[in-house]
Image (tube, rainbow, N blue to C red; front, top):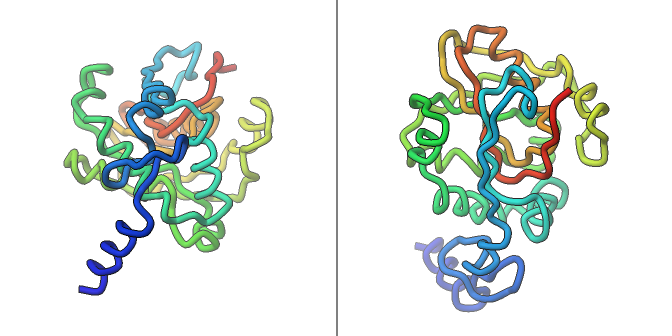
Amino acid sequence: MWQSVIRLWQALFYPPRCQTCKKLVEGQALLCKVCRKQLQKKSFLKGETLLGKHLAGACLLYAYSGSVKRSLHYVKYGRRKKLLPKLAAEVADNLTWQELARAWSCPRLTVVPIPTEPQRRQERGYDIPEAIFAPWCKEAKLPWQAALVRKRGVKPQYGLNKKERHSNVAASFQVVGQVKDKQILLVDDIFTTGATMAEAARVLKQAGAQAVWALAFSGGECRPAD
């Protein structure tokens, strides 16, 4: 009962607004329709030259700029937990499993999140990839498997160049559980050089995964992999 009262109070006095133009939006949306059109750069990447030899393909939903970039920085470094349902709503409302299946001609996949370091998760009180993608995964009726853990600490990728990013995440993941012969969909909040996803895909393939794809909420310019 009290939760319903709180939600009504928030709707009356703090109505949801677009994170870019501050116009009123419906439901939990992060962006209004006009601003979404400007930032939604849904793209499907493929090819070893661009992604390396371990990723079969990648889907990036939004440009890593403007209010999308600010919102992700807020949840990563500012503990703005209230933005997480908005980010999740953008995925749930603007991506279907069928789009991925058509783009990649792939079977139904097992969804594996890029793991957050335990210390950072404890400090934030939440896990960003899980908060953004688990609701979409549940709606799509895709199996969710926490098949990766961090076996060593890494520095934040923000601010590192491409070579430093690859070195930073090298040998940082370990596979837990059974992934042999599975088709895997890696999910994460940001995809720029693709270093993190490529390293995760490498260890999953090494553990017997049949194929690995990547899905990210946002992405910058992805240049050919070394």
